[in-house]
Length: 238
Image (cartoon, rainbow, N blue to C red; front, side, top):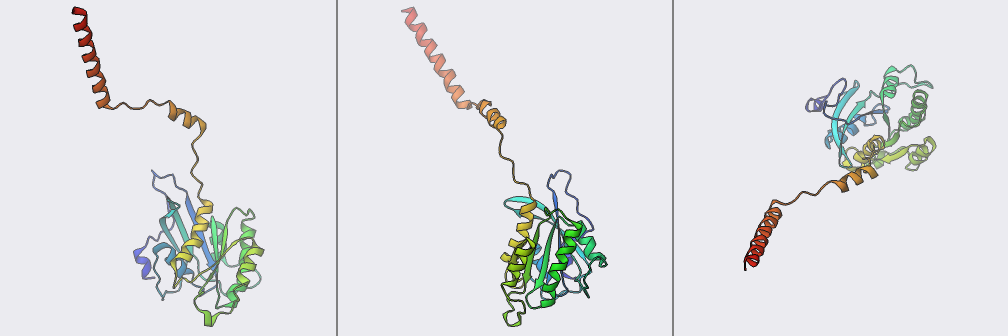
């Protein structure tokens, strides 16, 4: 992919030694042609490029801001699911991506009913690998701008998301960055620990710390004492 030459594409990302940030691993999974690469590039670069070469499974790494905090994120752009039967266990790239991920984006196109019908089985495969529901999922409907080509009715996405117990977003990677950013941000936010509030001990320690004295105030006090001492000596001598 030509665009990827300007991005960080590596096998595995390691945080800098002086960074305590957790690396959040996100797998983007769905049928072929639903716009997974366009969504990933939109999220990471804010840009949209209309033409992409066939994706062979690329891993991107970048640090992004989440609620003012810098978070290290890896995004696995997986190849599209082809010729899917009732079982996905034979599709190694799906299994590897889902096993690797801390969070998952399930993508379908509103212009392709087959991509929508794949979602239920992709979710089943995910939960077979991650029975613990702590792995968050966002169901993402892409190509919302192509109203004249829509095959999946708008209400079907939210209903499916409710049945699967995940968050739903309908976006257009080609027209709007904000919707795409919101969907990925929800996953990052759910996996980013909040900043711990100061404890009672910290507050007590802070209150006991002596306040630094201004050098000017110290100088003024010293001069005042000298003047007062001189005045006392004068009165005593009289």
